[in-house]
Image 1 (tube, rainbow, N blue to C red):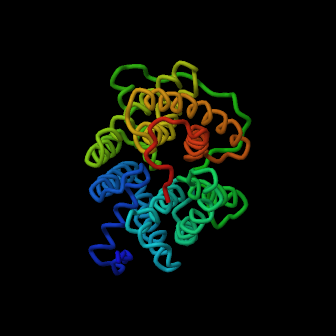
Image 2 (image 1 turned 90 degrees about the vertical axis):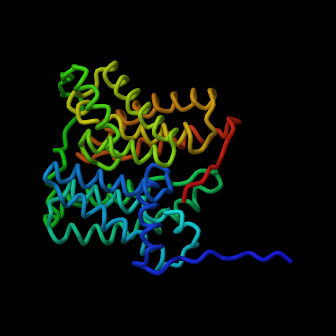
Amino acid sequence: METTTTPKLPAVFSPGFFKLYFKGIGQVMFQGNIWTGIFFLAGIFYGAYEAHMPAVAWGAVVGTFMSTLTGYLLKYPAEKGLDGLWGFNGILVGCALPTFIGNVPLMWLAIVIFSSMTTWVMVGLNHLLAPYKVSSFTFPFVLTTWFVLLAARIMHGLPDSGLGAPELPGNFSTAFDTSFKSLVIYWLRGISQVFLINSWVTGVFFLVGLFISSRWAAIWAAIGSALALCIAILYQCNGGDIANGLFGFSPVLTAIALGTTFYHVNWRTAIWALLGIFATVFIQAGMDTFFAPVGIPTLTGPFCVATWLFLWPHLNLDKKILQQG
């Protein structure tokens, strides 16, 4: 008779716990690799301190811990935790709230609550999406953060210091520096903005972290940001957003998802991934327009929508897996 061993979670604060903790950080870009997570967190700390926003870095630490701990407390399947799937939404909440809300005690309470909440929201959304053979990706982060940012508009205890003013879309400048050096910086910022960090050096950290785990993930991240940059320039998008890499981060995630995570790498899946990148830029522009009147960011919502739209057809393109979380 064959026997199966049920995986067990390591004790909290043990070396094994920190392994799955860093895996959770890497899973933001679909990499369950400890060293990838370490490089990602190092890049976050560099970019946050460079921008004089250390709360973003420490928010990332707290957010990952709380969402991971919640998986322990709710006794979700151990294999999910061991793969780092409890941490990736929490770290994004931890990065986002200090970016858009002032550094006050109530903001930290919101990080604790809503990063924890992403874990059970992820489980719930995955149950809803299971019949369609896709997972929730980073949408638990997107959904919870949207509600916090919207609430901050009428909660004076959460000063919305980093949010843009609500306005009708359409009034913007398309001007930006087109030198080669600047374009490289914009490209790398598109990668760093996955964690809401505006730093080309952080983009390098992230590419190195990806390459440690998967050279194809690094290649597709680079392609995703570069192609998104070209599309945004071609279609004359907001120059400030282009310069800050804000058209790059969702296409980066779409590129990794379609180019190497859910399909094997070949020319057919490459074409599919390139189409996905193109679509993501348009979806982001459309969502930016939709949310401008309330003045909240789209976050990684465009990536989620685009990737769902490109996975739902279930085309026979040498699939690998169709679940995350």
